[in-house]
Length: 401
Length: 136
Ligand SMILES: Cc1ncc(COP(=O)(O)O)c(C=O)c1O
Image (spheres, each protein chain N blue to C red):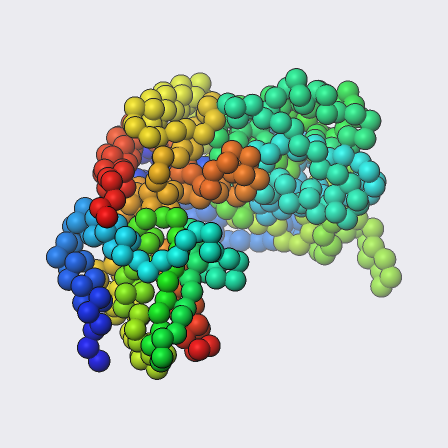
């Protein structure tokens, strides 16, 4: 179906590689390549420093992407969108900019599902401010337990930081309900949309979150670019965290005054070509029938789950709702499986998936993760299962003494 | 310098079976011959960093000859470790310094087979073998 829109897939197929690691980073649509080619070959210029027409044109195109992103996630205003270098940088930005609001004894609510990107900045913030991390329990299926969660909110709760879609389990989290609880208790809410935005329509106002973060590269866009959405009333009050060109109004030898959000958070030359490339990816995605995409991904996910469940000794972790599944195999080490799958041209993620606390919670040393995207096909899964069977035939054989 | 008998056996085994199945079956079999120690005897200082899965490595001396042993939970990794240690064991530190490790892996047909990250892991093990041998 859509796989013809992604030129790299043919190149990978020619090398015998089946790409099932889109949750790590996605292949790029031809529209993105064209946008980059056009921009880089027609003459580049820096943004927001106009004075000549070429720079104005580039600035206009750059800022148009901010509008695209705002529309894509349902933001109320374009100036609620900040471009960062990655999702990781956006979390770090928040953890510094929110620091003055966190006092000793305050509680930050996190789930054990969090990617290190949405954990370590808060862990460091808690250490700087003598605040406490409080953990939302998860159920056996890998969902945040709402009954238990509702009891953990209290007047000391200052911040909730949760993932919308687990990058390890593929479980969709009750983010809207959690953000509502946060609001009731006067806590800020941060949603990690790095995986969620790829597999469903996002409306930040319907979610009711204060901040929403994602990375362009997982959303069929370029790497080196992340997005931070911040509710205007909050974002406009936050102090800058990095300093340099572009983010200033006036500078003297002794002091400086800063631009309003979002530019005050975009110190230095931004990743201009990446922003223009993201604009092309978003335009490509908007032109798709996203319910057809969702149906396609749901059918693939079912195929994947059924296939895994049919194989002896294979155990899925949690019960995935979307696009990716992690599994372990009895008496088979994930590193051995990774090696044999790689030898057969299957690109899947193996290990701890940047989520060490989750792996500890689940009591596993590591797992194998298969992740899907809109360009994945049943044939990819068939090749994966054949390779898996070959690998397990070797690894599940009784060791010869 | 002639190959130690155990290393010659590793070479024969892997050269006989160049197919995906044959090679990996051979590696699993070699894993059982890995000079090893029990998981209870693992400790932080023997842990080799840079491997995909955790590997612990130790060195003992008998006269001037060195004897390495390793521990890992992954069976194929144990096989790969055996390929290295069965080549290294019984040599002196001076002899070890002259082994051409990339060439050894090429001879075994593993060079092409290993992903760069696994090759880096094995390289980390080789570096630790050499460091331990220099420390004796
Ligand atoms: C759920 C989740 N959050 C955050 C990130 C971090 O994204 P990036 O490495 O692009 O900053 C990832 C990437 O793997 C992720 O899966």
